[in-house]
Image (cartoon, rainbow, N blue to C red; front, top):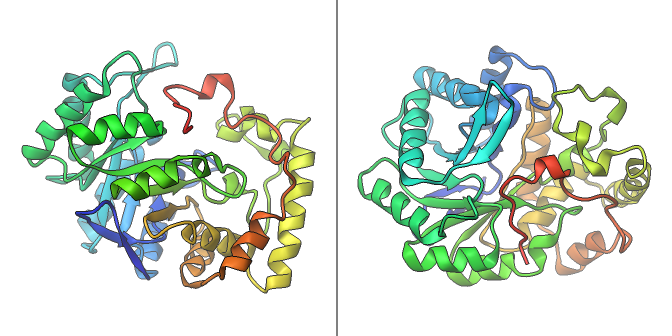
Length: 330
């Protein structure tokens, strides 16, 4: 599989990598054995980068990856994230980017992963009241100490990226990006390319909408992120599904699986772009990996982009309760 740089100094990773939230059952039931089989499939497909976070299953995702690495030693880099606290007693979440907490979070992630260093470490959500310069300075110290290899930021604005990058080199910015979430088109893709920063696209398949079998909101469990997401509401989902149907017809006409085509479209947006689809299914991951080998012409990219109506998608990207620490990209 083609590899791309995570920032100007690397590491090089597969252009289609694996988001590991789904290892915890966040989008449907799974087991540890199924999660380990998925990781085996990923490595066999040429995936060389796994993306996780300490809050994914409250450490479960990292623990599964750590167990996988104890049984198999593939050439795979690990990204994790921290900076969000969860209070089990109240269910409250809040951001904490303090140097003391980030160090504690990294140490805990290293323990769960069974690793001496995390290759790429993201601030998962920004604590708005704390200057980003202070946060990056703390991560730079941890990088010099050898605990992390590179610094990343998630769901931040271009202005925050520029401020952070002046303190220490930022290797990657992670944001939602797909054919139904294109806000990065406004400024972030240009900014990351200019600064030599990788853009890592999560939810590249629109939380399942751009696959051959779009989800049914009636089947969502209470744990499912989409249960409370405005784009899957009774009002908005039918309109979004109808618009996606036009895309499915185009994918069939072009002779490609819709998921593979959606991944290929993302990778065509820039040489610094990496996609991290998440799935519980080895078969679905195989389809995603096919997107790495599709080479779309400029005309094809424009044709795919134009298949959706101007109003698409209907509904905000997050419910208010899901917007913790999110900065607008433009």
